[in-house]
Length: 335
Image (tube, rainbow, N blue to C red):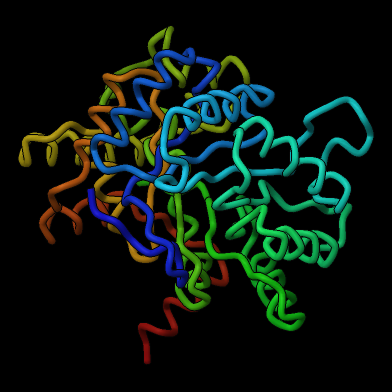
């Protein structure tokens, strides 16, 4: 596995990031340890979790694994924002909640520092200056090495960067967004922002909850009962069947299956390879429920799609942009 700099920092991370959302939920501790060891054997050093994943169990599993390793060899990322208790202040990006959150994450991870601490989503109730000054304090104290952001709008990212720059505070180094062959609206504005400001992009759900895993083909009327998509449909999650059961999805999947046959790879490997090498992307976050899925995902590295294959995937998955992006694109084309 190759390594890439995280944004404009000097920190090198593996080109795939191990997502730990399934740890303590679909995967018990023993299976999670096996997957982490397999990921490391393949050259991975970048592991992402969050305090809210299974109410802290994910962080605990990663922390227990870390006690059997050389901690400094790994880049550990976690997040703060969502509710982790019943109290009125047990949610959000206030100074109180962030400071409490980082201490609890450090305890669960059994480490003295967090390599990458990310705010999980915008908090409308807290001034961004309060959040950014608190994050800067954590970096100055050495409890956090780098800070990042997830699920922000473009103006929110730019506002945060400009405020940090003005005050001389530590700035965000990366963005963790939804990005894959079926979800490309990030390209209308946010990718360009990240490239201009030097933020690395570490996409979550690069296989869109299983839609791009190879399980689905044109003609299917419902997802399999034990799939993530079936659960999403039951619980109203964003990757549910009704949200993606359309002609564009089936056209993307048709092309993925064709290219997978051409290159002798799985559909998931082709989809991951595509997003891994998109402009601005540092490391897609791969989340596996078991070792078989992880090994398949790891096979997305060490090879490249041809220019023609990438162009076919680009064309079939391209989204029609709304105003003003469509207007701006047309005017640029008329220069």
